Image 1: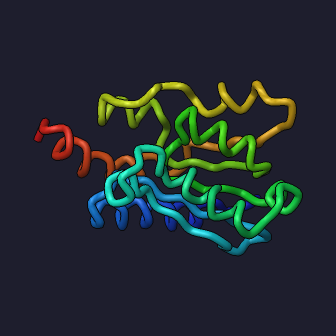
Image 2 (image 1 turned 90 degrees about the horizontal axis):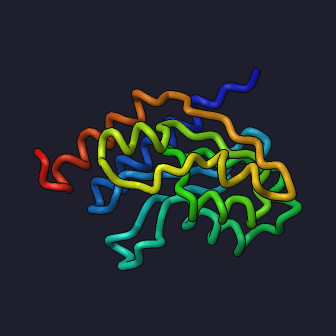
Length: 156
């Protein structure tokens, strides 16, 4: 059985790094054959672009280096379940598998934001299969959100 926890913990660490830089707390890593090949953080505030989600940043970077055939053998690990926009991007990128820590539902409970569309609902509509695993390490990933969102939304 594969151990996803080290990669999820790296994504969670990237979410903390994004928060410390002044961005929203989301991070992602791309793994091929057990090795992290790319990392990305959310940069919606520092990049002045509300589409700069960690997963979308990672996919844009991946597209510069790899084709869809290569990406089919990769796993995207992310600190929080991707939104509908990022789930669509994962599908179109060709990435074969996605593993997330904190669920969209838990994020919604903590932050009161989001589209509340499970990534599986988006990805199961495609012509090709994207394997989705998660939530895993949800409590650990949710801690970063509990630290960030009350302050950011003025509810602290």
